Amino acid sequence: MRSINYKQAVVLGTLPVILVCAPFAISGYKVDLLTNLLINIILVSSFRLITTTGGWSLAHIPMMGCGAYATALLAGQLHVPFLIALPLASLCAGLVGLAISYPLGRTKGFAFFVASFAAGEAIRLCWIRFKFPFGGHRGLSVPPPAIIDNVGWLDFAEARPYYFLALAVTLICLAIMYRLDRSRIGNTFRAIESQENLARSAGINVTGYKMLAFSLGSFFAGTAGVLLAHRLWAIEPHQFSFTTALYLLVWVVFGGAHTFWGPIWGVVTLTFLSELLRPLAEWVPMIFGAIIIVTLIFQPDGLEGLPRRLRQMK
Amino acid sequence: MEFIGQTILNGLMTSSFYALIAVGLSLVFGVMHIVNFAHGEFYMVGAYTVWLLYAKMQWPFFLAVAAAIVIVGLLGLICERLVFRHAKGNVLSGFIMSVGLVFILQVAVVKIWGIGKMKPVPAAYPEVLSIGGISTSWQRFIVIPVAMALLGALWLFLNRFRMGRALRAAALEPDAAALQGISVKKAAAVAMLLGSAMAGAAGALMAPIMSVHPYMGHSVVWTAFVVVIVGGAGNIKGTVLASLFFGYLTTIITTLLDSTIANMVNVLVMLVLLAIRPQGMTGHAEH
Image (cartoon, rainbow over all chains, first blue to last red; front, side, top):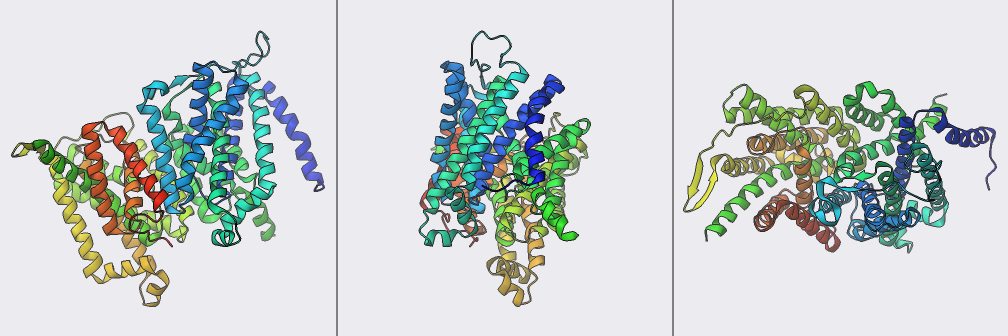
């Protein structure tokens, strides 16, 4: 175990206090924004899990949608309790991910982008086309989770209790992904990214590991989708369109995908930035587009590369 | 018999449209290694140019189309100079830069011309063309000769002109091409100019047929990518063949079932092909 220095101790000490106290200091609308941020944090981390093998999947948002649709069918139509629907729906997303990861795992570069993009769109088209059971353009409704019945103060239809539920799920997911990143499997993923042919000749089953990364990433994307669906109470195919995927890319590139914390920094910073830019809401996509191009030209490592760069400048 | 004739004609029209949009994409990838998602937005700008010049300012239709080709070509050139050049051949950063451009171009169009309002473009040639029971409108038919002319011109340029041959050399072996005195940067700029101009042409021709709105490029770029993947990225001949294949596949399934199913089948064909032959039908330019 690595010893913790002073700065890390301060962060580790204050962060839980902020995370627990923040919802009581702000309005319900802003609590929902924070909940959304937590969901997006799971999303970017699960996305990074896939990128560690070198593939930047464009099917990630539809994978999140798989989780959301699965929970809409399980909890909404079949009345499965939330705590069972959550892992089951995530598993559904993971299995869909496993299915499409086979052709995707054999491609790279250009073909990977395009194939993942097209596969994701095909899944989305299924939701639109097959009105039974997916509800077509109008989508499906999802009930707010009822974990413990008849407890007035713990109503998960309210913003604050749901925030804490999302916080708990987010922390569990992040802990699992962090452990995975540090494990032998995580190292193997990175080995594949840096030298695919070398990894293959060292006896690593490259396609298998790529499929594993893709399925695990899809699983956690599905978890994010479940949390989203139970907060919005309704889902429709449009929410999982390509525009959302573009935002995901912007968050990850802005933060940087080399370290575990990079994408999380990216999504947190840009979420607060877009809140600040609320009066200019219509311009926000253009500002994000400009940010991403400028980042790639002048700071290709993203936010996570900034401290190192600043040190070098001194 | 009439049904078969009609399907052959419809398929040819769809294929011509696919070829126009996909060949530009393939060319840009072959030379610059840029997966240009903004290609659909270039197509959209082409359609908007025709709406502005032809429907609003009453220019003759073909003059408006020519203007759209030039304007979108120049737009591509500007994007290459300001943005894509800095990707330095890195597929991932080039692709993400194009994503940034998608955002910028969409907001720009919404801000200049507004969203929500329909942009009706009246047909320039609404007369019905009928040959022995097969019928279509001239407006739709025009796509075939124009696509053939533009693809022919591109073929001529790439094979018979010095600059075109330099372009192909730069696509195959950039280092060796540079040693022969070919400017790889200039080749990239020319590829971007031509590729975007083709997208502009497709958008301009489709403006009276499809509805013109800021997000129209999205569904088109998706199909174009499927075509390019199957045809082989950077491989012009393969891309044209794949356009024919998918043009007919889409037409037949759309006639028998519906267009959403056709889109799904297109993707399935691509995924199955990738599972069997990851390098595409004819091989990608990527190493």
